[in-house]
Length: 400
Ligand code: GLV
Ligand code: MN
Ligand code: MN
Image (tube, rainbow, N blue to C red):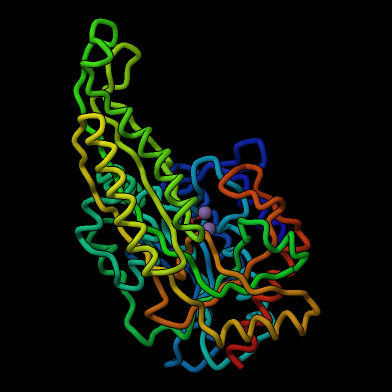
């Protein structure tokens, strides 16, 4: 597993320990091709679908039994780490190989999956949403990565809107979904625990907000005369932080990008397009935070004489993990004499899409210093192996 993991980390390697593999970039397509070959070389069956999900199916159960799905994703954020997603995919494949090598018969069949575009370069949770039947033509028309980028990416991968919309699986076809992932936070490290049992995945909403003013000469226009879009965007960013810190302590907000139009030293910004994302573990709190944030955005636009355009780019609800799976993970840890703690995930994961299709569970391993979405992301190899063993033992318990 280590050798395969290290080979995979060469695709899009940035030279500082990280990888740059945004969805359907050259490096991502090369990693996908390598994964396909790796599956076939292992003598396993390769599968793909209209959303570009890649994987393998092991018929180790009765022919008509559903499959227990194991997986994660091979795409990365721009200049991300080598563990986020990749660890879960390689561990899932290792479990499949182990069960095949030992010719074990199980109550269900098994399947590994590398979900397309988990990170949201194009849409976010694209492959899992497609599989769960949650994709809509509207979402594909206005994805968070931009429509033209999505259309070009799908074309590079030999896919289309239609094929993605047709990738839905019927209810009852999956016995469950299980994912091993790095924690991406510091809780396991500070608690001194080896394994995290995920209780829930946080919800995520995203918006594109455009503050619209007027382009003017940056030298000859007086400060009083300007309709400077950057002022609304900047003031909103600061006020959003204050709002969450004071009134929504269990939530987080992020402005991950601001695009200035026209974007020149000597032109007052006519427009600033801002990428806004916020997260909450609780649905009611989400609704209140949503209203409060948009209210602040309108106030800041008005304060600087700007227009505000609001585009809602999708919502992933917070989802609890299946209690039976959480129990199986705890037993697996106890069998392996590994210490464990229960915790909620502050990162989004494909399990969010699948929760109304089948029971979902997640296993976390510690992230050194909590670093993630950065080349500093690191997990000790011993912890990766512990996580893979817990994944295997949990699968064996769930399919007995
Ligand atoms: C995915 O990693 C996310 O939480 O944005
Ligand atoms: Mn991930
Ligand atoms: Mn990630």
